Image (cartoon, rainbow, N blue to C red; front, side, top):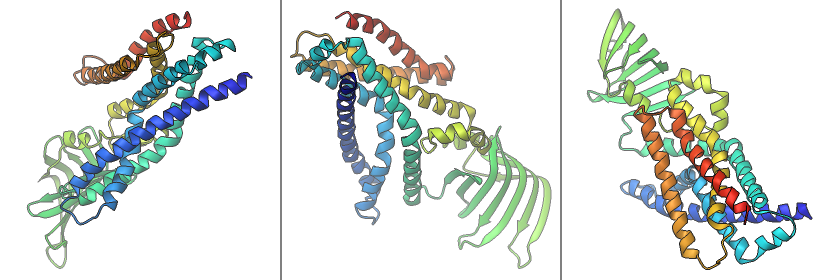
Length: 362
């Protein structure tokens, strides 16, 4: 009997969660589709491409909104249990309030782990496709930065010509083992510049141990010099700012290729933030179920829908701004980055630990 009840509780809860995600997904498609159409309004691409990019973008957005989706779904589910007298029936079979909450919260935690190990590898590929496609049609296509398994690639316009820079890695304010190709307006190569290191702390790059191959003549001229300066649109700060979107990295890739991403130029601070954000997701989902139960379970009256809607909205807003505040404190070096990520989790956990004691007594 207990197995049947466990299955009944978890399956119905997952149905509510999936329905909630489907509603958010539909709203996301509608809102983002307008944005994509506006982006492509001056390009002859039709409606198919904006719709495809929207489909690629929304799943990653759903993961970011997952704690709030779980919270809303949990509130709805607990209210439905009470309105149908299912909560009372479960108590007759020996299920306490805390036991029911623990079953649902554990289900949310397992769901969070499934997202990390099975869903994020898919969404990371979708985000990569989204960014590459948008970059292809971007008006700022002349200035692009990409990181892949072959290193750092930079494309930019310089004095009417364009330049492609390839470097093995970025770190400590230097591009290492770089090669720069300079092309004229007709896409004919003019120069190839090779260097061991380039100081890019400013937009005036200082190259060291330089070889310059000049192709203006039929036979190229080779020049060697200890230092060489070129002006770029990028410096270390600007390049690092382009790496802040780590949604193209899945959780599995992050934990298995952490050192490789460091070598490619990703900063430890950003990777650590991404890693802790991911690790906190299952625990966050667990606590959001518990938090929803505190606001709903044990209420005698069944006609408080507006009250619960208000509570749900206020709670989501408070948690959202609390997370933003903790990140802002970390960025201003008031608290550590790790503490800024886990502080909202700790605060919600302390609140839930007090609330659950009162719920279980009802």
